[in-house]
Amino acid sequence: GPRMAGAGARPMSLALAAARAWLFFRLPLAALSDGAASSTGGARPDGGPVAVAVGDYVVTLSTQGPSAFRLRFSGSSDSSFQTPMVSPEAEDANFLEFKEERGRGIRAAFGSVLVTHNGSVELKDASNTLIASSEPLEQIGNGSVVFKTQQASLYGRGASRLDAKQLAGSSTKPQTCNTATFAPYYYSTDGYGALGVVNFTMGMYMPVTYSSDGHRISWSFGSGRAPREEDWQCFDYVGVLNEEWCKQAGIRNGTEYSYRVWNTQCGECWCCSRPAQVSFELYLIPANTLAEGTRRYYELTGLPPVPPKYVFGFGASRWGWKDRAYIEDVLRRFRDGHFPIDYFITDFEFFVKQTDYGFGPEGKDSYDDFGYNSDLFDEPVEQLAMYRQKYHVRMGGIRKPRIGNADLLLELRENASLLPQGNPGGGYPPSGVPYAIERNLDFASPAVRKWYAEQQAHYHEDGVSFWWNDEGEGDYFTFHWWNVAERESLRSVAPDKRFFSLNRAFSPGMARLGATVWTGDLLAQWGDLQTTPGTMLNWVLAGAPHVGCDIGGFIGTPDDKLLTRWIQAGVFMPLMRVHSELSATPHFPWNFGPHASDAMRKALELRYRLPPFHYS
Image 1 (cartoon, rainbow, N blue to C red):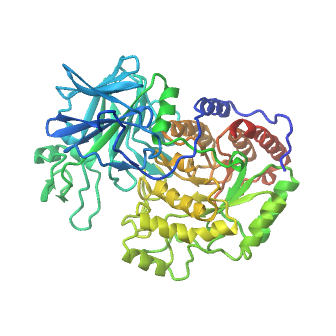
Image 2: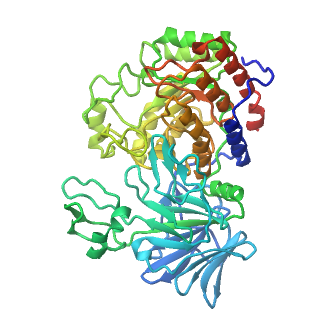
Image 3: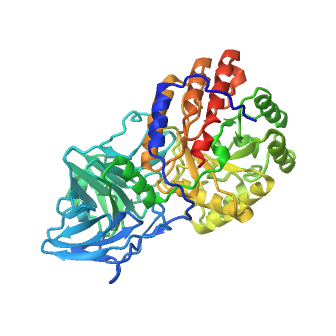
């Protein structure tokens, strides 16, 4: 087991800064349940949500959770709306309707929101101080809401490696990518938080954006899907709406079209056909400070459960576990070398002997998506039990959101269980030829989730402890619904166990499931170590409280000093795990010389002094 020695090698200042920032935003933790909130809003003694007419639209006011207002913008007073970003479990705050000369609104214990007769929204805090107001909702039909501001800083957008050193940002385009996640949320130093929602996605994008010029914060809500006539591929309507040709064509949100529009800028024809009366929502959260705003944001999206205790230890991961003998040699070296460890993670090789990266849409007959590679696990039940008993470690396995087996693909395609598009691959910004075209599961379907949970159940019976979910950026909510399926699979076998998974990207609300996240495929270079604490903190503010990274970098082999410093920084990260690609030297301490391995051992010993603080 771990040696509880004194403090080891001095960690880097950037790691301490990240640790202090993360600890500052430690949240109340609670185990909450499932998928999507039906946004019917909070309760009031004399009826339901309050509907206020603004031109051709209706703004419906209610509360959501204990400390947020919900504003629904639609062409009718129908209040049915679902989003997985908002917790379905938190009890909605009571509120009262009020009317005054200037308009109608609702008041709760944490503040009030008013829609004036000229169509402006005013948000006040519990002390009745005005903290935000919008311009008249003249552009509501174009999916636009604009709030006034006085040079406020905005936090919580998420981050990529390119902007990780900036906590405050002026805009966001929500998407899930390898090494980048952005959310449709901000906390404004004007004194409130805001989460934007529509009821559809465009692949990896959530078509809700905002931008600030220091005086105006402009929200834009995508109005629907506009398929290309020949192959029904979707383009990003938010961007198209702002182009001059589209304005000249008179295209408006909330109207259905079925004619062709000629884009004179690039010479392409598009057939525009969208649902009428498209709805969107804003959740407004009065909060005096960033810390208070972040806590209330998590109350809205769902408080994260406490992860299993072993998660606060150290994990060893790599792509390239060769065979059973190699696994057991690595575990023995960790224990004999007195390097504390609680879990290890296996890549493709745990369930197949080949990757599926070169597969076409038809897949291959020989591929087994839910089996074991006998070179590594010839006796999986006995092995996993022995690893727990002899080495005191758990095993997590990689999962992909797609299917490679040809027969399964035929069956799933017949049942309309697959997403039409593929993952874009590569890093951020998205680029490269899509892979897994027509092989990604549509986890938004309850039937798909049920089927997948059944396929996975035997792994939990065999002793696999958790999942490492990779390459799920095919849709903005793939990771969310994928985790719902995996959690149900665990519950079917061991209902009392806490669910834990590690994911390459996230969407707001995933944390309440027990899903954690890592920052993607980093490079083995000082620059990626330097940006990692900023990425983590930005992701914490955007909705992912438990974040880790590929310590040492996934791509390439670090030198002994870089890996040592990265491991020392990792001591203070919410999740601590080394990882490396197939061709890299595994980031295990003994591979980097006695001086470096001694420093790594001391860092790990320090890590193992912290769980009593975190796990409480």
